[in-house]
Length: 153
Image 1: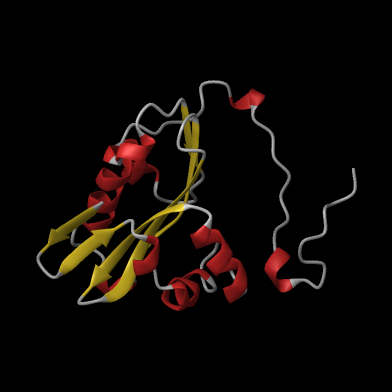
Image 2 (image 1 turned 90 degrees about the vertical axis):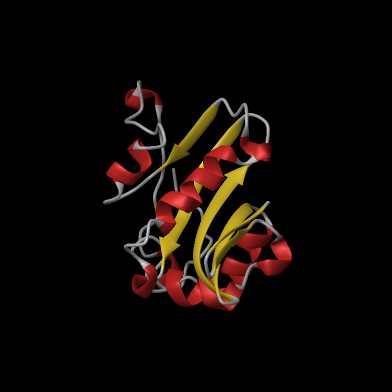
């Protein structure tokens, strides 16, 4: 999948993704602060990624963790600050929701702190049965010495 709009390009080609550029943003983001570069590389390699590029440099990303059949989880969505306000996040989200490998997905989820309005435009809403969802969280994991340890029951 590749789309162009002026000097911008979207691509899902794994070879196009620029882990160092993605890491530069994610390591300072609220959801992945301090994430090591090796984990960013592994996450990109094991996900469906739609990168946003401006004149060859990666300036945004939408990463989908999926089996490409029944389930998808959208994460790591960003557009660099200097490129915001041009509808690029909407353009990426349109590419995500129209992506051929994501059609027929039964459950497509995401978590956001402040972009509910963007995702609502593409059909995302509060879970119908939030009481059925569970999670365990490890805030600050990338900053701690116990990275990767599973919490005790």
